[in-house]
Image (cartoon, rainbow, N blue to C red; front, side, top):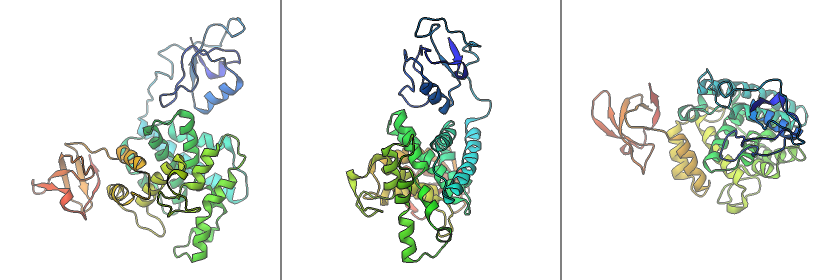
Length: 362
């Protein structure tokens, strides 16, 4: 039978594996429920679970209500489109993160439960590839840092899924990506808003991973791996990054994933000191110019996650012209062959290196 989480009591026995996302069960079949399990289920927004009719001590379990399969959220589809839900959750998460960041600036310690809830809110609905590709459209110049934290967490989590990370590791990766710039709260606001930084000010900016690593020390529910992701997310494969200039295998996998997500979103966003670049141009830069800087496997995963072009789709180029995709080139996935709408002629986008796809057209 299925019962609501609020009806669970220690001693209940799970009758089927309980999943949230990924291929690994959150709680396995035949697990005897404890208070810790109930808390975990609530953290993951699980509404109901399958249990045995008897408790582990042999007594009959009598919940206030038994959930039918038709009513179960396990099988229920949301009435609102997933992408719409995602945007709602995303905007709420940005506002929540901003409030937390202001508190950190004032010296408040990090609340582990709060950041975990924030992460689970933004991964509870999966965005369509086109929305994920254009997350920069949600961002603003003034609130860029808050949007960046949320977008980076979503991107990192979904890259982690493509790398087949286990559920527990995905959550820690998401927390790490969400908190990667928490150390910025210890950097002077004057520096954060300055378009023309001096050498010493750059050094303080480059110390934010260390500040974040320190802030997360001893925070319950944040693993050492997550802290390393925060500390190392600006390190680069060739040792040219910061703050410790480590390279290759010395960089934790979380940091490698976060680095790619961080770079992609940053380059596509309008910032006080940098103009935004088209997403497909950024993906080309990451694919062609960042070998030696980013992990090649992570590069492949972020490209496969974000590039979702199909034959027959209409696209708009960065010069404003529109065309229909007639052929996809596997060696250059961001540069298909188009039939231009104005001339009806075929156009090989790879022959025009200064042009890029700006967006799809409905």
